[in-house]
Amino acid sequence: MNILDKIIADKYKEVALKKQLISPVHLSHYPLFERETISLASALKKSNIGIIAEHKRRSPSKAVINQDLNVQDVACGYEDAGVCGMSVLTDGKYFGGSLDDLILARAAVKMPLLRKEFIIDEYQILEAKAHGADAILLIAAILSRKQIKDLSGFAKGLNLDVLLEVHDLEELEKSLMPSLDMLGVNNRNLKTFEVSTAISKELSEKIPNEFVKVSESGISSVEAIKDLKNYGFQGFLIGENFMKSNDPGKMASAFISDLNS
Ligand SMILES: O=P(O)(O)OC[C@@H](O)[C@@H](O)c1c[nH]c2ccccc12
Image (tube, rainbow, N blue to C red; front, side, top):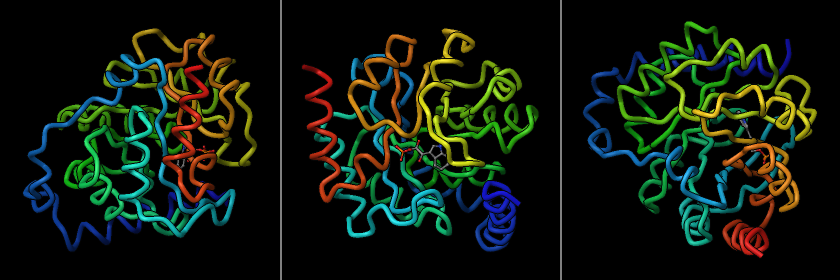
């Protein structure tokens, strides 16, 4: 079993258990459910920076990244740096995140927040909305076309933006549909952890222009972003490069001034 299969097997169990305690109707009565969402896709389109900065404590590919920070401080640092949005990992077992992280980030900042999770059930989309997310991630590698259609349609019904992540042409061709806002190419192969921005460049021309193109993972230089911009990318998802610092906001700020110069 590869790591992705393990994560998904755990996720199905986790969701089934949580549903028994907190019903979908209950989630829809959380106060944040009423909050008007802000579009991450629109923020990216308007920006010439395009950075989505991630909160990530650890990952299966790189055990510990940084466990010493407060998510609210990280969120404020990122917002002050001028990023377009923030990605908050909520998986506990493999990434050390939680829905509490999402709530704390929401309480701290106004910018669009993406719930970074392995979504396999509508229930997790209700959770995202109830904990202050503006956008969700769907991963083509773990979903059928029908699941992508149903889950993205459900998210759109709640005014959440949808970022669909692919890693190869087959996943991309399987996934294209109007209920998606952003198409992300993950430069990291979730099965082997190999990282290369070549895959973003390769797939860019196959992504129709109505979707905002996002390049995800393994981005650690301004040059890489300038290069990817030439291929039509308007969004850049950066985690580890900022999170490895004691002050991710400061790191993001320096990165952005470099990008602007
Ligand atoms: O830390 P990086 O290499 O900058 O990557 C960030 C982000 O792209 C990565 O965390 C990610 C992309 N897709 C995912 C799906 C699930 C969990 C994590 C991810």
